[in-house]
Image 1 (tube, rainbow, N blue to C red):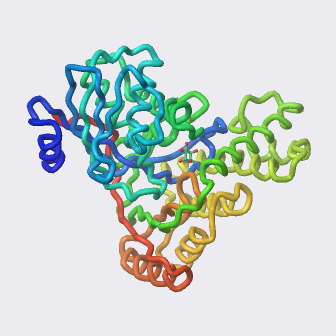
Image 2: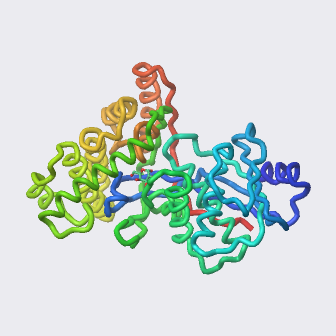
Length: 388
Ligand code: GLA
């Protein structure tokens, strides 16, 4: 934060009246590719994230500066032109949120200056973009006194801007987790109606460990959108025989009994994943409530197999990380997390196995892929907040 303030002074003259903000990244424990299928997700906010300092201006200019991407210098936009410009690069994320507030009827009277720094590894699937969107929403709410806006609204505006200003058709999970996270809890969110409850993550004997494959395959956005379309095709065929609104409305048995109406074989597998993964998530949260962490881990493993084989959003590198993790004694569960096609895996590892896990995974992954993975033992943090 001190560095951010110093940078702010250097760029904008002084730091009188500057305010400080933080917005986390997230990891999803289970419930993958269910959030646009009317299903459940179970993510938590992390203690790593994006820090920002900001101050209102007297004119209509908007200034964005990232200490991670200093080569872009200060990006200057203006309230009179809230449109996506390729040359704004990363700043299209905060700008999109300004646009979304306006679209939702909030008049932002003056511009602002904003400097950020994030420690979420880039392109890792730990939601650096949702973190930045929710940070910006938190800043706008605070600077302009929009006290009627809730953290859920901020999450929705973040998703709205990502869908309509930045062109990624994501669901609500990431922004919701980042805005609504609670220390030491995961959020059991029903994306059909945004009802949610917090579940304590009491793991006295184990840790949540994230492994970054360091790969991000191209065409992620288009592959993601393909999955959405394929799931929608499965739903459409099922609706010819079932009175349902989403794939989250049915259980495995109902799916199996009716799956033959899904004409396309690929769409059938996508639909199967969406239905089974939603039910797995419900069962996993139940298991956690019963302190049955072994069952929780088993369901995480099943989630990975389903993402690997039916939904096909894993990749060779993440399969290696997960399948090697399964072999290590003390690993309770392991799966790819987030949108997929690279990024991170999440594992639950017994305390006394964490060191072996790290050493083994890093070594085997390097041998098999030539890539140095990164392993982080993480803590669950709280959602976005204002520091002063
Ligand atoms: C990305 C999207 C989320 C969700 C996940 C998959 O992270 O932003 O909305 O769909 O992929 O579970």
